[in-house]
Length: 201
Image (cartoon, rainbow, N blue to C red):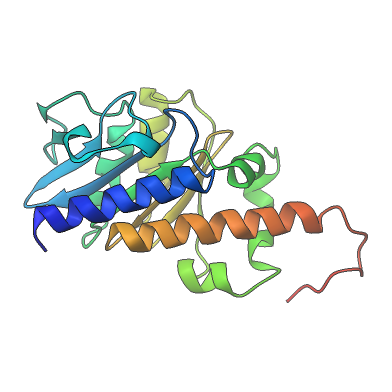
């Protein structure tokens, strides 16, 4: 696929995520991989206003080749280095996913997200990675993310931080972000009902 097509995909995903309220202000970051280089949204950029010139370029080894990348570019590089075939990565602080990530028992209860509909399991293969809280952009976070990373796991919930998802294309990563947010919202709403009032599958 040509770089123009990959850029168009990434821009569509960024704009849609912003329009749907899954990203606000200048939060979140998106990247795609092309011919041995990572193209990632620049530091401080807004998904709603993202344009083709708003991508910085980073080598697989972490060398910044062009522009000022999002400070969380090492998270994206982990996907590309450790999960061959990853073509795009999206990280958001979407509301319900972030609320779930704030739970002190999130690690023990992440399986609850599969309990209400079959679709998140279909998207993730039943695998969701968990990463403990460390300050955004910190070396500790990057080290914890790399330690928790498993090549066949495409979605990672970071404590009090949100979700990161990688897939073959930006469109597929977008689908995963949306399905995760939907499942997290259902889990949150369903939690307000008494046991026996809602179906668990």
